[in-house]
Structures are given as structure tokens and as C-alpha cells.
Image (cartoon, rainbow, N blue to C red):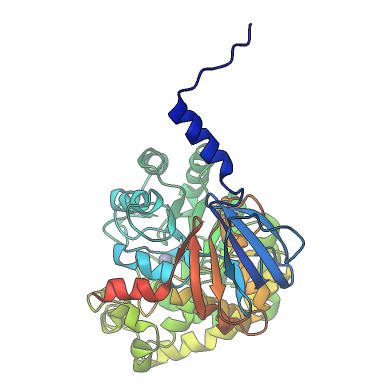
Length: 455
Ligand SMILES: [Zn+2]
């Protein structure tokens, strides 16, 4: 083929010339001088520089190790700490909560069924396409439950054919995973996991009528709230399994049952579960709040002002107490269980298991966004280091979502990050001191978000 020089019109030539004059750093944001907690689990690194281009991390180094390209917009992070955008691994996302998550540094949510599959997918599309400002969203769509289902929006399954159909419907609708709820029985689990794995769907399990070891060996990806552990660690699990025929009675018995477990049984189950590679999403903040439903000050604690007065899911504590029939004695039993739940998290981590941080917001007293910070503090209370708790709320959450572009601040990943006015490496409560948040390379300020929703 003969090479002929293209004849460009003069106007176009000028444009080409102008474009070539643009400095190489145009469109680059350089975050300079902060302490970096990169989500990998490594110790914090001081004097870091992060280059962001086209919504992605282009480079990460120490200051002066790499040149900041001319024309880049530089932002000084001196005195600040930067960590990856947070992943809430257990959420029930409501539309009003989208900006709240972002204001609290949560840039990804794993939604485990708030209402119908269609409305979950609609919200996911709005968030992921950017028509609604908020975190990126992965969703299970409506839950799959036994019959009759606990919640009217859930899909009830009775037969093996029902189970395969329910999984297929979610795949067709555009869900990312499958969530099973407390009334699903052990005989339906193998066909469910089989159908889900054909479609490459992880199964998130909030167990009731199946013990955790049986479910993990059948191939579920995650144990939500650590449900099913009491059944697996008890010598006589029958009463727990049967109690889950009735919603909340099963919860009551299981939540109180933790206090009755002994260390040897907890250790055995932690090791057995870790060997299956199942993940746990402990939601210690949910267990903590359930055990303190009688504490009226929680409804007015700092952060609650982010919750609209109409958001009954968070605010209606009285309604939950009425429905559950929980009395002071039940709540005391829940409080006694907390130490064993913490011990289980510790044992599971020691056995090499994957712990991801999730909140269960927007359920009672669980503020979307804030509650994930409370979860990180509780994970530290249970025995994780602050860096491990941050890893649980970043890289481990991304691993659970099989989203390898998220969860770490290293070159090539999506530029979702949180800049803090203090260093959480020594005090985990510092994760709440948010200076600004970046999502897909765009900087958002919590204060201006709060002004928007206050209007
Ligand atoms: Zn939940």
C-alpha cells in the first residue's frame, strides 16, 4: 500500500497543534503528602502521592519518587490519611440513603434485598450509570426464602424446580448474587448452589433452618450475621432449627444461644468453616444494636440527624419491639452473647477466614454509612487491628463481590477513596473524620452533600 500524506484542513491542523500543546498532566489529580492505608493490609505509608487519571489510579509512590506531571491539579494531603472507598458488604439500600453512604465514605454497597428485584435493579442502574449520586451498587434482588416467606417481597421456594427458577429470574433481571433467607431448608440448598454456580452467582446466606457448616460445605459464599454458627456449634441444634419456622422466634433463640456456646465448639466451627473458604459478614453492629434496643439515647446519637424523619426502617424501634415481643430479659441475653460473637470473629480470622465488614443498614438504629464505621470499631473491639478492620471494609468486601477493580489504592484500580483529617491506624474512630470522598475520580464533600439533602 502506498503511503500518501493526508491533507488536513487548516482548522483541524490548528486543533491538532493545540492538543499537542496540552501538558501531559491535564486531567490528572495528584493527591500529595498524606499517609496511605492502601487496603492491602500493609502498614500505613507516610508522604504518599497518588495520581488519578480518567477515574482510575494511575500511580502510587512516595513524594519525590515519581514526577507529578505538569498541568496536574495538585491537592495537598499533608496531615491527612487516605484509604480506599469503603465497601458495605451487607446493606439493604433505600433510595434516600444513596447520598448518605457517600457522605460517610461508602463508595460501594452489596445490597442483600430491600424490596422487589425490579426496584433493586432500577436503583442499581441509577447509581451505576450516575443518574443518582451515590455508591456503586451490587444487588441480590429480592431474597429467596422458604414458604411462607418471611417478607412479602421475597420469593418463596418449595421444590427443587422452584429454586432453579428463582435463581434464573434474578440472573435475567440483572442481579449480581443470590441471597437466601432463614426458612430455606437443607434439601433445597444443593440445587440452588448448583444453579447459582452455573450462572457464576455467589450465594449469600442468612441461615435459620440450616447450620453454618452444612451450608458452607454445600458451597454458599458468605454467612451473613454469622447466622447458623449457633446451630453448628450446639450439641442439640434441633430446637434452633425448628424455631426458625416462625420469624423472630428463631432469631430470639439463636441470638441468645451464643451465650451458651463453649470455646472448644466455637474454635471447631471456626476452623471447619475457614477450611471451606466461606466468608463471614459478622454485622457486629446489628448484634450490638439488637442488644441495646431499650436504650433510648441511641435514637439521638450523633449521626442520626442524617436519617430523615420518615425513614421508619431506621427509626421504628418501638415497632420492632412490639413485633418481636422482646422483653428486658431477651435483650440481656443478647448482651451476654456479644462476647462469644466477638470470640468467634477472632477465631475465624485466626483460622485464616475472610471477614468482611457489613452493617445491615437501613434496619433499626443502623444509619446508612455511619453504621459501617461503627462496625469497624466493633471489629477492633473483637480483636482485629485497625488496619485489619479497614481491610475488612475495603479489599475483603471487594473480594466478596469478586470486584477486583475495587478495594485497594494501587495502580489500575478505580479511584474510589476517602481522605481523613486523622490517622485511623492508631485509633479506628478516626475513619469518621472525613475531609472528602472521591468516587470514580470525582471529589465530593460531605458538607455540601448534607446541605443538599437538608434543603
Ligand atoms: Zn440483612
